[in-house]
Amino acid sequence: MAVYQKCIPHEYHASIFEIPYKTLKEQGIKSLFFDLDNTIIGYDEVSLSKDHIKLLKDLQNDFKIVIISNTSYKRVSLALKDIEVPFIWHAKKPLKSGFRKAVKMVNQDKNNVIMVGDQLMTDVFGSTRYGIKAILVRSVKRKSDRKITQFNRKLEQIVLKKIKKNLPDLYNERLKQYVQDH
Ligand SMILES: [Mg+2]
Image (tube, rainbow, N blue to C red; front, side, top):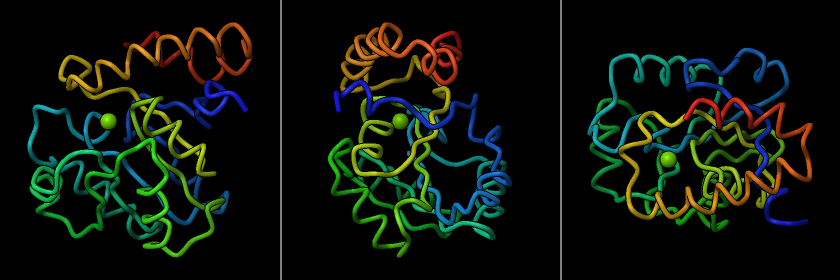
């Protein structure tokens, strides 16, 4: 399977607050993995808002949650200081190791897990190649992307073009809105 085929999310939603969690639960999803930066908070924000904490706490009633971030222990632990949620830092997405670790933590079949993230090249590609479905969300604040992310975004443009050309139906269904939203 070509790389671009592994960069197609299961669904796209405008934010983590718009995801139909109830439906996911009904579909048998037991665990949700979340990226942190630009998925939950912008790079220029240091901590979760009350709304974020409420959402994650509510979700913890129905799902096992793990935060999988490529950023430092210091940043992730500070962001999550007001909520008890397991996290993986320096996850090196799109490598499989972080996802593997998270699956072990929740002790679930990969088919019952969904990864939620804002980047095609790390969150979607990384989880899909490991066998976990991905939900793509709009970046909280695209302007606050870090340097490495700006590089990934360039790759993303190439991948998006390939998907649009070769799999137009999937593109229209799951990625067109994502492109329009940025
Ligand atoms: Mg991110």
